[in-house]
Length: 64
View 1 (cartoon, rainbow, N blue to C red):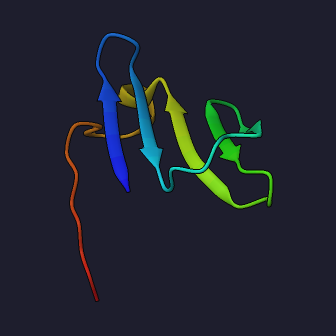
View 2: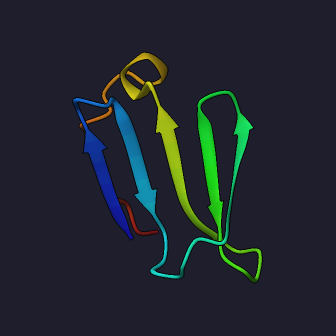
């Protein structure tokens, strides 16, 4: 998994796999889900990230 924040574009991109993107769908305004051919989610894009979350540059990782 990779997490990227483009400060200039204000986009947070969470890549879940390296599979090629076959389709993208704006699930809710500003939230884009990228899908592989098999229907699995490849990535999540959050547009205007700084307006939709308190700290788009802060990442916490937890394994339970």
